[in-house]
Length: 255
Image (tube, rainbow, N blue to C red; front, side, top):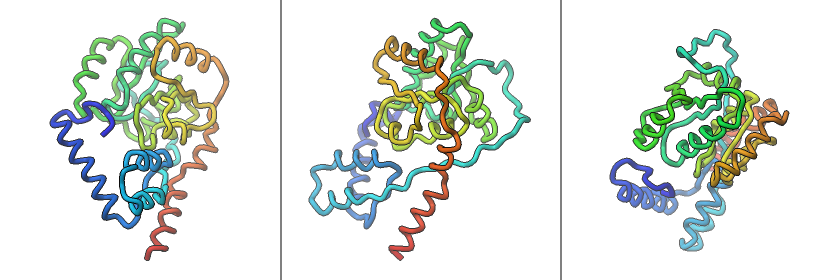
């Protein structure tokens, strides 16, 4: 609802239907669950005009965060031909809110400042057809490597061996790839938005995504530092078993 041109067709109509669906959900649900405190705050802010009993329901939204699985250690990885040795990494789909076009501009400028020939690996599904992004990738294909639908073991390898992982989304509910990369010890660079602030571990670099000049200075400084992410602490905090315990306790209570 917040992102311009999120839907390829009938954008305004689909957003109108989406808004109605959320309002109906708030109206008829006995309890609301969401994945982050940031999402709950956003719901409260967006639907401030609702009657008191519905606003109370929103205020009582139960937070059940997403989780991650323990990484698979597999040395027998068969990488695509000509896979780059030094690379930055993005993992996810290609919808407009993922801000990949800004990421490409950022890496294009950053490469001029670095001594190594660093690539950008874009890994994930190409199911969503983002024509603007496809054109941007084509115009910068000299330093972009696309890795479509990586398997779990391939994904863990990508996280573990990247120079840094980027998640510059302008809007997220949670942001699972950020913590997936964290448990592999990758350096993390994220857009400075509340949901990513909420889950980003210590030593994550948050940037404003407003000026490549300003952001590049921060990134260069960050890459030079030995400010590693605590992988074990991240894995301990965001295991699915913690989320399932909260959900189980809730279900037992209402039953």
